[in-house]
Amino acid sequence: MMKVTVTGEVDSLAPHALTRTASAETRTHAPSRFADYCELTKPRIAVMALFTVAAGYLLGAGANAEWRVLLHTLLGAGLVAAGGSALNQLFERKIDARMRRTANRPLPAGRLKAEEAAAFGAGLAGAGLAYLAATVPAPATIACAITFVAYAFVYTPLKTVTAWNTAVGAVPGALPPVIGWYAACGWDGWAGWEGAAVLFGILFLWQIPHFLAIAWMYRDDYAAGGLKMLPGCDASGRRTAAVMTLTAFALIPLGIIAPAVGLGSWLFAIGATACGLFFLRRAVEFTRHRTDEKARRVLRASLLYLPGVFAVLMIDALLVK
Image 1 (cartoon, one colour):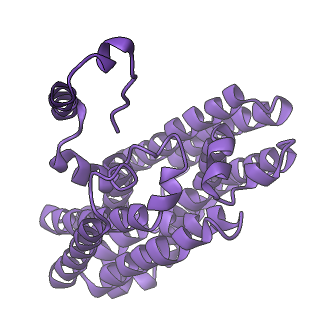
Image 2: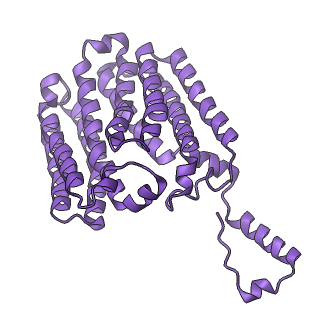
Image 3: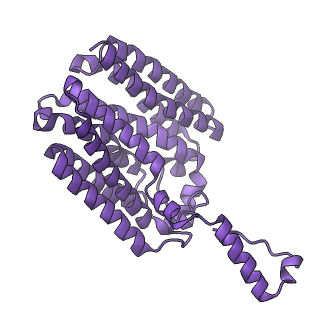
């Protein structure tokens, strides 16, 4: 939302001139409606989710991968993810209005109406699920529907109820590669569920230190919005650091055992362990010095860990398998 600083020079303008000036500034600086609708979809989060959907599909399909099915899966899952994000912002619009980092989002800033966001979000999600139902195996559509419901209607309201919301939200956040896996394997994928389970576990564990780092950096802002985050009720940061370190550590054995269930080989185990040790080191640093800068380093490490692990997994599939 545009901020106006009133000065003596502005006060001397005639009312109609001031109106024209403000309108011109609004036209210059305010996002377009198209940009606002795009912001409702949280495109950066959607891109990362679709990256893991694609990885899940390619790993599940192996040599039987079909680009047509992959594109159908990405399009449908992308529409559902966009719809879920729009409804998330709809439900949290009053919370967002109280937080500095989100106050300029389209809904709290008043650039879009709640009715518009509701229709947009529901329409995207419904279209995405219908598209998946028509183009990919049913288990993938079911997994996507569970992801949508858990994110928009379970995780979102729990954010103001309990600090456990991060763990609950990590469940729909970890399902995208499972969607891809079952788009590739269909009902037969249930026989090889171990690979999908490892992908789910990696994403589930990764999200905990990732989001706790963000919650620590913005703990005052989250508290102002009424969100129940662990750093908000952990002034010393000891519990936050302990959970960060524990979940970052758990990623290492998960990567090591992955080849035993048929996901990757020794190459992936080595690469995942190296990425995990790097991530763990940053979490331990936060344990020793619980500052915003150390939390930011954990966040950066998390943003390197996930694409690094999935890149190694894909390279492993291409070179070794």
